[in-house]
Length: 362
Image (tube, rainbow, N blue to C red; front, top):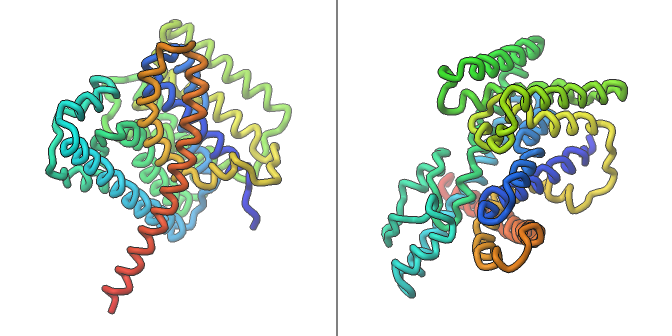
């Protein structure tokens, strides 16, 4: 079966959008206009869950093997991240001073300034990262700040494949249950649970709806109707919550609340409208990013941390929009380079694990 390049293309565009979001919401807090930062969320992480739903099936063994490979790749990456962070601190303390390191970390802003710098490796942080408790990596704060997605993805995929495997005739019922839970949590915010429940209730809806769309095509006559519903929902949102909700969209994302859910409908509708309609016949730069989305996701966390050191000295020297364009392009290029390196390091890590497997099997 030939690979659907539209999926890779959509993943690539979604990844480029995530890089823009992290350009706008992290270092961009110093200079990018609030309106632009909000609009960066138009094409957001919900697209990845929808694309996962389209590509998922009911094969439990295949799905669990894919998740196991992802977990190992993730562990290889955070191990590298841990030692990069640790050795940088040793370098700073050895050749400069504690004050120099504290000044370095203050570039990220007071919220992410490191206060407990030590020559003793914090092994508990590495263990917590392995188990998806995302303590901050001082030298690369954007990495752990964007990893909430991965934990939800693991949970979503496990429950999703179990539903598809054991309840294939009742998927619509589960969609209904997830929608009902999402509405219940929003109507009665006092019972909105902590942890991952709120995330999974909404994103499982996206996952399962996307799975039901697999191989299908939205009729042309339905397209204006769908966009009309999205427009009506946006109008209602502003009328009900007030215009100030526009500047609070990002806060409505963790966990997903009604305003953010409505905000994400445009991107999800667009994804489904072009699915099986837009034909991508040749591989290109965007499909390459889509095929290697996980390494770009890892890489952009590092690159989005590093660009702080360009933003801070340049933010007063040029118009904000020009700096935004320059920084975003540089961030994409840097993420591309880092992702290529991470891909090679991942291959090395797997080779080491295979060597250890053979040695311990004897």
